[in-house]
Image (cartoon, rainbow, N blue to C red; front, side, top):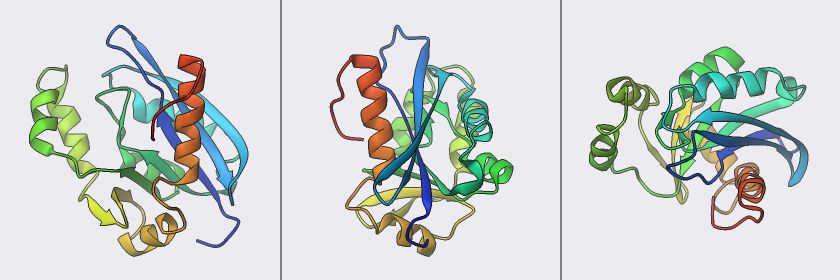
Length: 182
């Protein structure tokens, strides 16, 4: 990815088991500068994350300039699973979902068994594809090769800046002050 390309980083806010909706923030970043902020909400443990994120992105004036969409995990608002393949198909943009630790699929399946539509959610997780080790992160990819994703992720020291900023903004809005790592 060339220098100066815009990245859209997306993360959800902190939430509790009593919250029915969870804030999701998108930050459009280029070379460390914020060009814009987007937001939407998703149902906690629901099934609307893909649709709500697509709506947020498609309404944005930044979409034509964004070169890659990056998410902090394919899970927003608990077990509201984002279909990264669908986001790629409908936006034409590559999608990279990153996490710091390799997902423990046995624990995920066990936890999923306690929420509604568990089989559909597991199918979305599997549709996201193989988890690739890229630098210090793990990533699921849609519309981009592991090599090209490594070139983008390698520009950062850990979590990409657009995701980190989305995390900080979402936490600051919901809790009144940001805290923790993306």
